[in-house]
Amino acid sequence: MKNRNNISAWSFNDLCAIKYLEQVTDILAQYSWIYETRNTDIILHNVLEKIPLKWYEELNSLSTTELHQVLFNFIKEKWPSSLKLFIEQCQYLGQFRFPPHNFKELTETTNEPKYVASKVSTKKQYEINVMSGFVNEICQDSNCSVVLDIGSGLGYLDQILHHQYKLKCIGLDSSSQYTLTARERLKKDPCSNSMKHQTLEINSTKECIEDLKNVLEESNFDCNCNVKEKLNQENDSKIMVGLHSCGNLTQDMMKLFCKMEEITAFICVGCCYNKINLNDFPMSKSVQSVVSSTSTRFPGWSPCVSGLRLAAHGTRTHTQDTDKQTHLEKNLFYRALFEKYIQNEKISWRQPKRRIRPSDLPDFETYCKNMLKNHPLEHDSKTLKNLNKLYDDCEHLFPRIRILLVLQTLLQPLWEGFVIVDRMLYFRENDISTQVLALWDDSVSSRNMALCAYKR
Image (cartoon, rainbow, N blue to C red; front, side, top):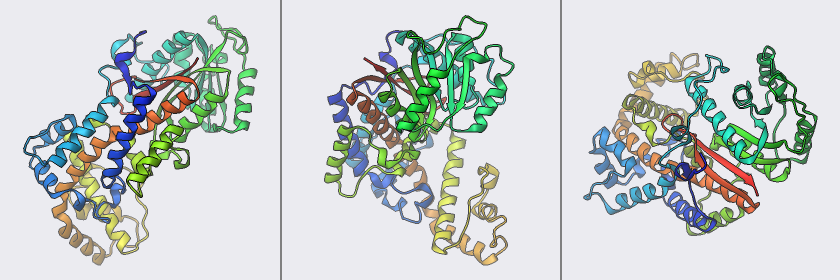
């Protein structure tokens, strides 16, 4: 698949990319009230009341189906001009995140990977399968035969890359437990010598670069499937890859790639943008200038964790399941009410680790009882009475929850675009060719964008 234009996102030259981010940051700054408060605090800080009354009245009159279609540019002529403009701007700037096709759709990939344990989720198996085929294609284009897999986990991706595509792999993970488990898994694999796994904390320090160079120089490969060359041979070009590299790991991988001549290609599917260190965002000098200019026009605005968290949310296709959306809206409302109460009363409380199930949400009182299990106030009737009163006082706000979630979802691709286009421009400032490609449909997994880079 040589022509990748129809799976490419944010296909801008540098000038257009800067113009795009100027428009994006203006919208994000102007409507920061939509996302700047954690969703658990929206009642505590009166966020729901900030939705313009005319916006609320028009959007609340829509059916569930119509409201979902707002995310796909459904607009009524009678709506307030400010609402129509907001939706139109979000749709225009958000469209670049959704290319018409994806790699999986346009290529023949292997069947479900037989090397992945059945206990691994179907979604994860799917992602590993598609990613392996994509890595192989980029390796062919870049003449790479060695894969440096960052955040390799249990080594499933590496196993497929070797057996299916005859690539040599070095898996690195910060977790020694994952490394040990990966090695244990591979003991019975006749090609285990072509899949190295080591524990290494990845960052962009000089020490890490030296460690990586040592790993590359010391790794030898010898197995029974014609992959026997030493890694340090001149024709062994290397590619750095990461599947769902969390938070700042992607940033560190990018910096390492720029500094290490040994590595000629790069593929990373990022995730958990909310874990990015704000001191390291934006990365690009030109984007830093854009942010500075936007902050001048909108005093007090700057990139924030809550915005990065919105970038990491599910895309618009994930709002189509009505039952899940109803569960989400109810859970969010109850949680925000509960948060307001414990904050106002200065109650020390830890959220239970288990996920909230639909059975926990028949009504607010049941929800509160579940939240207070094993807490000193578990059987305090006064607390429960006060919580019920708070619910009665705020119940009229519940319809605004679904409106707020739609407004946030309209901004989601803008925040994600902010993050990814910044990364593109950082690479280009380092004279590295880059593109962003959709690997699979975002309805399967929202984090479907591969940042690809190639040294000239």
